[in-house]
Length: 164
Image (cartoon, rainbow, N blue to C red; front, side, top):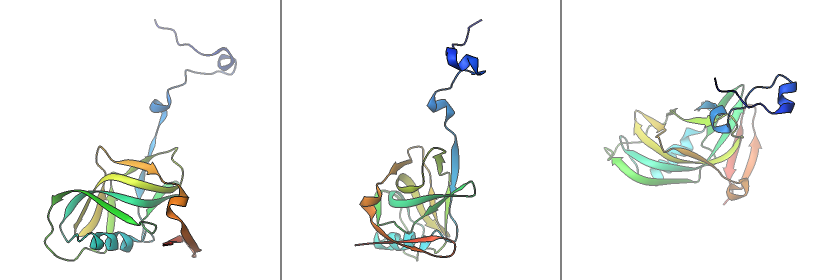
């Protein structure tokens, strides 16, 4: 039988073997709400000449993550850039839908609220705008100074207006 190695101090306090950080990481699903300002995502998609039914691999920069009542909410309001990496399916030329949803996006529980570049997601616009995770989707922290914003506090949410 293999014996676990427990540091002496830990053994005094009923310590157990500590798992590595990689083993400990939990994740939380990311969601959007009616306050997530999906109209900003829609506008960025229009600027990139995307149309209804089009599917692309893209980077969204920046998005804002906030924790609220144990949930993680993503906001598109600070988004200044939509980078198209690859077109997977051409659109039909129709209008981009107004509503959005996200699927499969998770963040590690130790990730702090703030601005992030969301890299390597599948973005499609068939019925709703959909932001879907891929196996290579990553969250890269973006310093606030890169995306200077004017902040206006409303009753239930914060609106971030990019400063040009």
